[in-house]
Length: 126
Image (cartoon, rainbow, N blue to C red; front, top):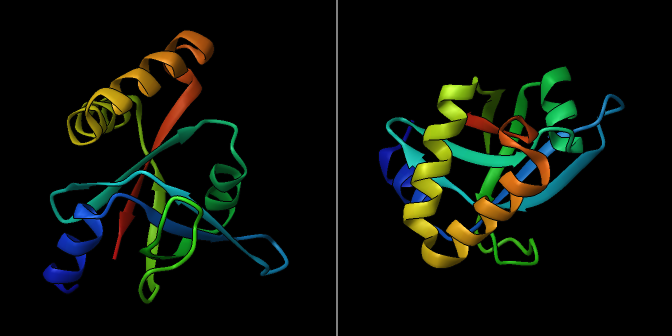
């Protein structure tokens, strides 16, 4: 793992997370990202397609992107795993800190709509 790549991806505003369907078709999604030690943390809705795809197949591609998911750099192979409740809560705090008012409002709105168990964290290891 290259620490500069991890740092660059963790500092970026968006991460393009590409997961794969059972038939191998890639599905790319822009997500908010935080660095968590030697890994990256992502937060998403628990019943999102990417969560289902990652549970079935942990290998993913990650790279920097803009808000609309247009790549702004090369993608690299990684492994993703769905996190437990404690790790998901830590990712929420890190995201609120990184994304400021917008992050806090988004996280609060999600908690009100879906409850605490309506979202999950995804740990990405390069």
